[in-house]
Image (cartoon, rainbow, N blue to C red; front, side, top):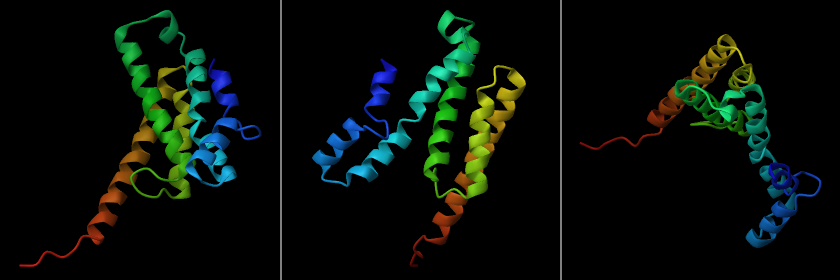
Length: 144
């Protein structure tokens, strides 16, 4: 069923994206590419289940919560690295850092998962700090 949903967003057919573009009155190819980028997370979730069978077979609640946190942060990071924006614009090295962190989260050993999570969080924290710095530069001056 997941593959059927992905087929509607595939770059060559993109029937759902074309229909959405027609309804919205937007450009069909730009809408198709955006839909394709947003749907990339749909490929990651089944892959994560393959590498972490305890999610399907049932496991310790702490392991399931840990894996849920990992995949949630990995999906956010993956989407941000594709779009180039999280809290503010990402530089290329930040995008690469978050993409590598996303890949490392998928390795089924805890050491790689922790390293991947550290890279994800590092990229997110750096971007959050940059966002605050850029917002403080553009704040209006308060009148006394």
